[in-house]
Length: 423
Image (cartoon, rainbow, N blue to C red; front, side):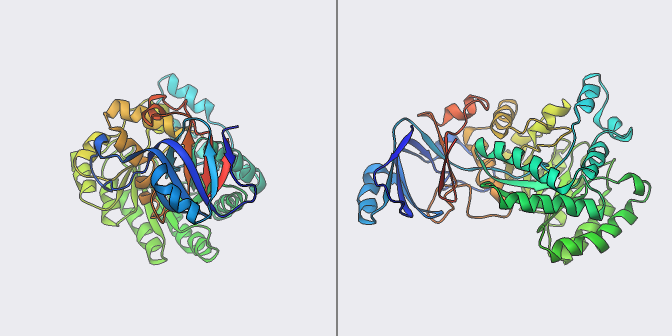
């Protein structure tokens, strides 16, 4: 319907053309502000891929002789398409059970998020429902959400645990993530967020809870290779900076990478993220000039979650200031049952750009190679030689239309690890 193959037999080398535009993301800085005139846009473009790797990208005219010489399979597009790198969602909570529509209704009535959490709603409600769910139920619901995400162009997605809050149920979540990943085209990157908040059975004993996680859970996670990443929520309803630092340092001794839920309602946790050399500090709605400057002068990625701001009705994070000060800014959905149930990366990215006056270049960087940086992955997020062939074809002749449509323009063709999927 949209493409046809010049040859009938599958050949690992593919020559895909013509694209109205190819948005490569090549040559862009990892940190700081970006201008749209820095974007490389190849018109009448083509790409050579071999198995799951990009061999070369250029104009159709320049690549055609090489494609013939290599006896590549010709994949011919029959309408206008813009080619982009696969999108990267570097912060989600896709593995959960239950709905928090009740919390949303309370917020509409004016009750603050933290007050709802203190009354037994919020994260602890999701914990109750997730503990009741079986591993199979969690896996199947995660698969359904991840498939929707993939169809909307997300080819790599981080997924956190954190609704079990005990050894048994945190492991149940991590097993569900691992098994779902084996059945999906999308790549799921698991993160152990057992330090999401303090469970009811440990109220008033946060240090004891973190010690239990350190002594009983983390060694199993490490031994069974269930995750290479540890997260912790530093906030009034969760853990303070002193507690978090001790837990993080222990996790680092075991070899885990670190990310931190930071500065969502109160500042300073992002300073801890920089101090412990975390891969990313996520949220940052409450970051002040002090935190912004410290983040900007570090290698810690500032991961912004506009979906949570929409769900909670709070101010957007200071994206413009972070970029202008030189930070590496990634954008993710925070898809979760409480504060960010939308889970639409393109829509949220467009809205963040509108409110914070970000350029197209900054927005695309945030959901491609800068998101990859937050996950410590260095071969996705750009269309260039040697990178994985995670690619999206959008039905338009102008890449600007994608974010202009505020989430309504989705890809119609996806290549994941070089395998073509018609959506």
